Length: 499
Ligand code: PHE
Image 1 (spheres, rainbow, N blue to C red):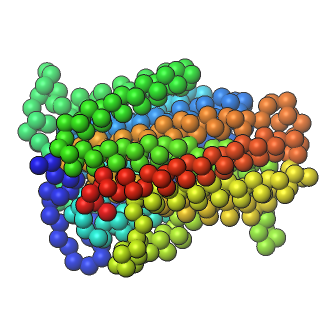
Image 2: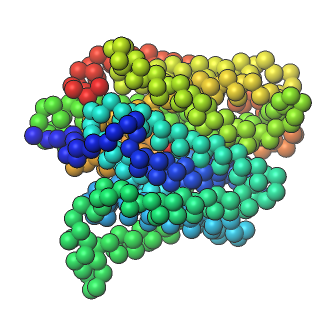
Image 3: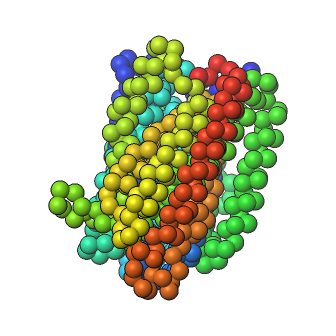
């Protein structure tokens, strides 16, 4: 029989959380500080410093974000098969550190190279740190989802701090110092992991150490080939940035391949495991749309905040870019405190919504968020300048949506996938995000403000470019949420014993 993820390792620990969770929490927290700190600067840097027009900046952002979440498929696969989660996290962390420091250099070449190193590093780091969290729990441990929620909180503490501080340092002091700050905190995350990894014991060690040690080519061991091969991918990624239009074909082909691969693996499984895998696949497909919409917060909304908003709180002028990047993860932290305990509380009373129902709710929430932003736009048409409140209340809804999908999805993938492919499926979960990010870039470019309008420097003229699309996104998300509601009974059945 095909066993499901993590059920092979029976983990016993007393209390609410396994102690290793905190090691993974802090490692991921500082890694996300650096990742989101850099990301907060990216689009604004391209339009204001590199003088890209909006469509090009959105295309590069979409390509970067798409590649950042495509690589976890490979990093996940390499870890599952060869190097194990622990080494993958360390290798990925080193590459990401290099990437951030390269971005800190004020050279023309460093921009694409810095991003390329981060893309490759993230591919090894991100899926495997999440898989390590999965190894701490048995598959139906009721504490498992709360564990992932806590981990998710670490992600967002890092993202909130990094988004705020790097955007502030970048825009107020020097763009490259902003990128450099991100690098410093990535080093911190890596050091924490190196010091604490002993406590993980044999979780996430290479699955077959013998294979890793046997030279395959001259004196090169498979491990060296994996690291060396990854370094060779860096200039390839740079070449892709130089020909970013090719990304359309790449994402399309990879998407189809991943889909066919899951179907091909799935049909060979026995019935129960097959239905579980297909349920996961359908939810993964919906997650693509969710991220395409949600990620406007780090794309078009960054430019909306810079160009068309003035945020004042108690008479104090707030830095718009920082606030835009602080609010979503900030809300995740606050709302996790309410929602993470809410699920087990509802569970005890037999009232916890199923995973597919949570997914449907996420679309309804994000739709509400876009309607709030739309209200913010139309009620300030006369000035073209939006105040703080639409960002606050809009993101409140965005995050309610995120919390019904993102931590739940991570946990769902580790539960519904066959054991042997859990990291790969985690990679595919991130790859779905990648496709979502790619579409996010496309949706963002629909909000491009033409150069001749920007030159007039009049917010009244630029605001309608955002408002119109924001309304359309709100309506579309509501319709998709409705569709998902209809699929809930089928998906619940397919998930079998997994709740
Ligand atoms: N913000 C979360 C994280 O960084 C979830 C997320 C993952 C969001 C990937 C978008 C893309 O882990």
